[in-house]
Image (cartoon, rainbow, N blue to C red):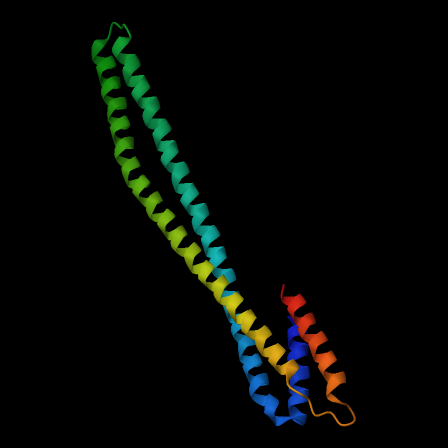
Length: 182
């Protein structure tokens, strides 16, 4: 980022000597600010995506925990139906208790599953949002490079120099700017 700022400062200095470069320099400055803003928004969107993904994973883990409890209660209910005992009333109460718990867990699972699917949808939405910011950043960077190349290829009116020397220098700087971006 500091290279971009020093490059912008250098272009501003050249613009002092040649007023035709001012629009290009202003465009570059605006593009640099837009790149910074979009980059920041993209980073925040990716962070939000990661946080939402963690919450979604937690929700699925909660769903699985309820599922394990439900299966355990159903197993216990099945075992009470084959267990021989002298106190059939107590065994029936236990069977009813664990059968009710299994039913409760199954009902809770439906709500948890729905919430987990909703969270997955939020993650996908945030991922798409972050991808759009990344794409915007790419296009703004390309615009910045194009304006840099345009600025480099405009003949500078430097006293005591000729076009050939300056054109070689500008082409070298344009290629250097492209290498920094890639």
